[in-house]
Image 1 (cartoon, rainbow over the protein chains, first blue to last red):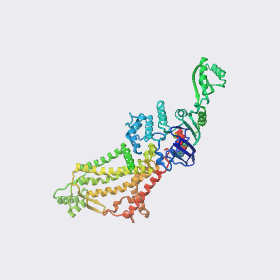
Image 2: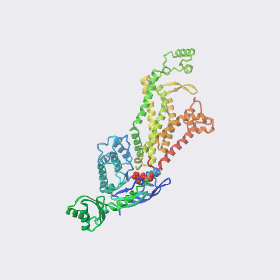
Image 3: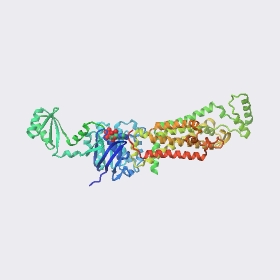
Length: 306
Length: 310
Ligand SMILES: Nc1ncnc2c1ncn2[C@@H]1O[C@H](COP(=O)(O)OP(=O)(O)OP(=O)(O)O)[C@@H](O)[C@H]1O
Ligand SMILES: [Mg+2]
């Protein structure tokens, strides 16, 4: 059994009379990317602030590599690199000076290491410019560089893709996967976008109103016998519907000019092949990961911020 | 400990990376320069030089003054020279540096601005979050900022003295390395050694400076707002002396901070304590108590409190 990199034990937070976090229990393991998903105001940032010791924990504890962030702050935080909300740096100094600043706070960070992280995030060209002139994407990159300086075993990123363009998002996803897979870093990423999380996380925990509603493996849907809801865009629709009902005996619904059908993962290619053989034009096939999406939609769907 | 040194280096790097800090240094140097030009070209009394027969010159001046009451001649000062048979030394760099010790109150003002902003801007900018998630205790971070404020004040005091001396040397020439002068003190004129007088003046103004800067630092740690801290401290600095006029008759007035910050009241020839019941040791005790309260209050409000959004 692998020891968890980070463990939340019954973590609660009260601010004034508000009960913001209501007893969180979960663990994050080395080498995994854990998604922390929830609507605005769910308590993601508050939880992250407690994980890194910026906020006091009202009840419970956060253990980082077995050390309490409350009673053993220095030893615990040494393991952590983080961005909390926006990656705010000193705008009147260059990216390089900002990194020097953080490197002086932890012994043993060499200039070579600084250059290494700058290269990793692709900031070589801009690093000597003032941070005040950086674009949001460049600041996110510098934020990640700052978090990686001391080779933390846990990386916490609060909405790291906030404000990034698609290319930037893809790049960040790429670093995160690489850090988890190659360096065995435990990564915690928060977001309110399910689709984005599914692409980079191994597990996703859904939080709402300070409570953890579900924790799911992202790839459990990849099992071949798992039933998924498949949306098919094809022409002509009627014929396609007939073909699927006739050949696979499943119930097909027609909605918004799409066919919606529940299929085992293994059956999806067979259906496509059959439709193609019948000379039906297929414009799109989309398999939905029902499990997580349903749960998340149930949460988000209400669209309520309390 | 080297860990702490690194923190102080960081704070200094941030402080001097700001244009505003340099603007303060430049303002100070320009003020000294302007003072120098005014003394050189517009003010004849202070820079007046006497020849070998200075006794006659002085007596002649006094005679003129008697006939013309509007004259700028300082009769008391001349009398002091003549009675004590002190040959007036010509005005030089050290004299000018001595006259600029009054600029220490400008330095106090500038230090208040730095003290009020050094922590609060970390909160405003949101950089406090990345600062506090390092394996360094909050106490050390707070202390490194406080030490940086004091270093800034010391730097400005050194700049004030050295720059005044340089400007004085260029405009008025150097009149020996350790000259003396006759200056006015509360009880009348006296001859003093200029270098030690400069040291005493700056040292005493440092007391007021440290108290006000520490006060601003405390307000900014508690309220995490620099304009509030700066505003409060400057207001108190100016209002403090007025307040004394209103409450001076009460017994508790002697416990007010501002009554005690000016320790020069206890110097010989400076008119004695401001209020009844005060003495040097009394004032030092009062100052220490205030100082400890300021420091402990900033410490307590910083080490445990949540760092949440604005
Ligand atoms: N300092 C505070 N005082 C009072 N309430 C607070 C404070 N900080 C956060 N809250 C409340 O806690 C709840 C959770 O806020 P939090 O910032 O953790 O949400 P989040 O999940 O990060 O949301 P978002 O997706 O918008 O970033 C919100 O309802 C917020 O109003
Ligand atoms: Mg948030």
